[in-house]
Image 1 (cartoon, rainbow, N blue to C red):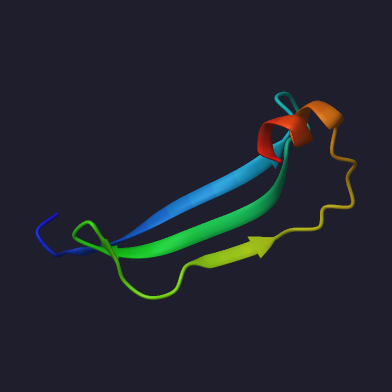
Image 2 (image 1 turned 90 degrees about the vertical axis):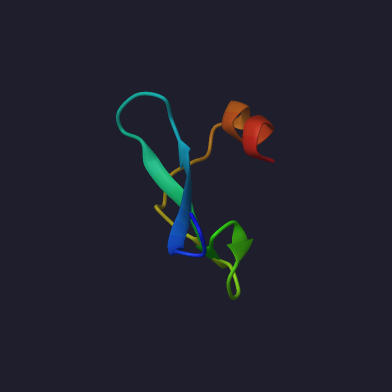
Length: 59
């Protein structure tokens, strides 16, 4: 990576089969292997129930 900037992106979803809903987005700009700036985190309200087994996995 040699100091080149890149973005680490993570999503959290509910469901393993359709429909699958994104409930959280997170990102961090990275320069080389070092975080560069504040991380981004956004919860997404899809107005969908979150199954208990999904809550157990993600907390």
